[in-house]
Image (cartoon, rainbow, N blue to C red; front, side, top):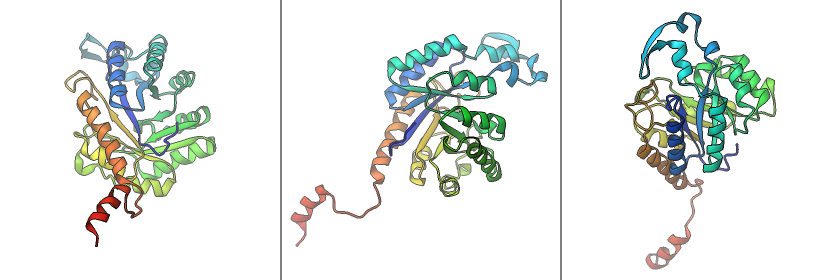
Length: 281
């Protein structure tokens, strides 16, 4: 993954596809039209990720009443599904990646040619997963929601100790869904940049687009937002996700503000020079 001095925009599909390849493909299409750089999923082995005491708990779902373990398998894509996603993204000329929630899923994902591995905030303290991810991929992104600086320090140290050649980026994040505006603390982006001397981005879970766009003024070079076809769809992440029109506005706003920021050097632009000739005496 190379940022090339451009804001890198991740469209987080996550599990908002609800186990439907058709919905996943529609979300991929939307991300491509909007101008996102990559779509991202979440990969789990439910047998490992679901706690034993939760596996047999019954749950009401859009597909009827079933155990929590069966539900997690219902919304989980398998190898055949990801092979189809991989081919579909290639046909649309957009990259895809995913967050592994266990070591099995990490081994599954690294078999594909994906631009990075993403460690979600929930797993920032899973140092075994971070260690193996750093060993097995060249580019690693870590989210820092609900984490202390000491915990982020330990995650970054684990990456460096595991593979000094692994490029890593850190995302500032508030893991409340949705995140209150007063809790976003966007200035922390600058704090993370100074502390880790690496690319820093912003993973937003708030309502609205303004604060996410504004994060690049704090130095964010990576933007991640959850996307959905409709915020009223089934799923815990849908409500704080961005719908298609909102995603188009978000990408446009990020690109426009990025262009407007410039380099900070005070100059007279070429277009100003013509005006200067007319108005200056």
